[in-house]
Every structure is written in structure tokens, then in C-alpha cells.
Image (cartoon, rainbow, N blue to C red; front, side, top):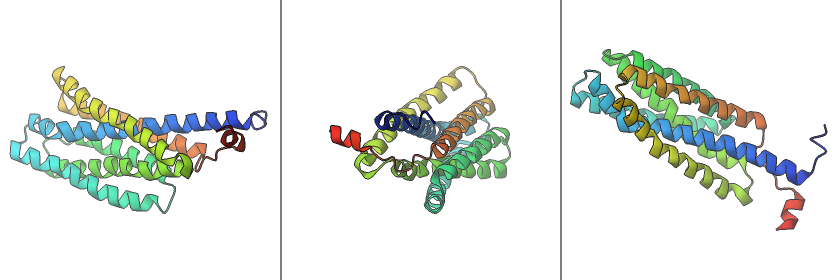
Length: 212
């Protein structure tokens, strides 16, 4: 109760910082995992014994799954709470990326898990934009989404580097995929925390507006 009676300007900035931090984590994880898999999946499949042409074809299925997931999850997130769609999507991405690590050698299972990994990972990433847009009032929306997306792009740079480093240490394909799956749970936690904050459409207090 004491917190509710506090300075509205302080409450506003505390709430804003919480939401921004969580949104940045979600964007960072989404981009990191997507670009890690996009960059290294054909090589990982090749190292697991799959012929080069087939590895390239199966790797492309990840992008196909991502395109389908982006459309369907993006559509669904506009009809329900997008933050929860994103959180559940990250959980399924974790499951199917881990399953990808366990399906080496089984072509049908491999194709299915690659498609579903792309579907839920890229689909969840696409919902982040609508979630971030709904988090801020119009006056700060472009800045909030822009900064979150920009921070996510840092993940897109780090992801392929991390994948190359792990491969350079001799990490097996299965173990690398298991390790890749784990951060998706962090993205899921960030999405559910964002939903818990219930900061949709954060309103700028009058005192903040008057100070400009």
C-alpha cells in the first residue's frame, strides 16, 4: 500500500524500467537463438552425418517453419494476450530445439523438429513486436520498440559467434542444441513476467508531462 501512495513520477519510471528490461531480454533471446540456428543449422546437420544437399534443404525448412509460425502466432496474438502467446511459444521452441538434438539420424523426426523449432522460435519473435507496441502509449511507442529491437539485434550478432565458439571447443551437435534450447526458457520467463506486470499502455503521469 505504501508503494501505491508513492510519488507517481517515481512509480512511472520504476514500472517503465521493469518493462523495458524484460522486453529487452525477450528481444535479445529471440534474436540470439534465431540467428544462431540460421547460421549454423546446416553445418550442424552436416556434422551429424547428413549429406550436404540434404542438410541445406533441411536447414531451409527452419525458415519455412518460421514464416508459417510468424503468420499464425502473429495472427493469434492479436486476439489474445500476445505476451502469453510469446511465453508459451518460447517453451515449445525450447522443447523442439532440444528434440532436434535428440533426433539426429532420423530424417522424418529431424525435418519435423526443424520445422517446429522455426515455427515456435521465429513465431514467438514476431509476436514480440506487437507485444512491445502494446506496452507503450503512442507518445513513446516508436522509441520503446526501436530500442528493444536494437538491443535484440545485438543478440543476432552474438548468436552466430556463440555457435562458432561452441563448435570450436569440440562440443557435440546434440549438446550444442541442448545448450541452445535452454535460453528459450529465459525468453519464456521474460514474456510471462511482462504479462504479470500488466503495464500495457503505460500512461505518462501528468507531472512528467508538465515537466517537459
